[in-house]
Image (cartoon, rainbow, N blue to C red):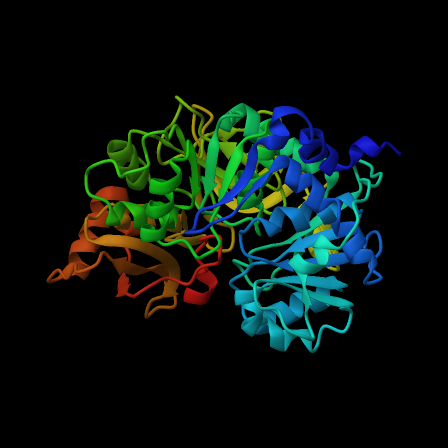
Length: 511
């Protein structure tokens, strides 16, 4: 076994010398925010093994992280990996019940909790019988919990333990767009694989870049954007601990002037709604924007480019593949498509019989690449259904164009037929949000008086928009945009849409 297989050696330890050691790796985008150099990260993360050993936590044990995006996140994540212990970052927006379920499912031996999240998490701790230690990250830590910052300062530095490329390094829990989250197990080599493919060959991140990801570190998209991509080249990442809103994101942009911004379609749409027609402050250094989580509506991409002068590279990734494997490319952006395969990945579109579909047909997307997960924890049937040898089923439906680009049609579970023809909810949603009064839209199947499936739309209007006869106007708008038979038979105006923390609309809740 080669010690060089441990991902921490590449991302952390190799930066602990020369000028890079003095460079800021992470800074917090809040008032009074702290920063962390690459040298400090190496020193503090090397103490995590000693901290955990004092609580009888051993190699291959799991430690949960219910931790906001702050400088402690990379310290804990990489410190656990250095010690051969498996960090499990968890969504910071969950309910008490879900925290309890994940702690029980993962059998975590320790949990690191940001102080502000403790009121929600605390009731779940009583049922988490595998826990040896509860570490709180904050300024006012009281018994019976352990003060993470204080205890870490008393710990000794340890060497990074040997690990193979194929050894499990960390888990992520899927966002649960269709129900209960699943523990997704990733190996050491997957982290470098995403940096070498999307990070290097599409995003083209460089040492002098400053990257700001509104998408959080606890899920796959944010983990690559805000941690592994910048760390692969010695760049700087801006961390934002709070929930992103248009005002807060624009404030961080103004303060930090990043060169790369990473968001999700919902956030881009909300930012556009709050902007004037002039480029906001802090956008002067911006050279690249990326989007994932759900397909980007074409109208959102075009309007963003018009105002900021920067394209959004819309891409497709998954927790199972760790980051984006299908994407538009710089200087080759076609809004309304998801682009082509990222170098290093192969894709296929197949029908219900597993046969390749032809140009113009709809099929399920399968992907083969170096960052595929090792499987789901404790869910063998789902692992066998998703991971088919070298190929991973994404659960997404796409249409193949003659130029090789793919057009998103919806989740496999979201697709339905009208008059015997497949309907893409996303196509109808794009048509709806292209209307000037609509901020967001989601479409699901609903049955008419004859028990037949027809489109039903839920729309969120832009602030202050009240239009007489809006339902009929939107129906005609969709008929003109995508076809008369695809228009929503029912339109319901709502204040917001149910979403995962990654910005994916939970259509199963609307159904």
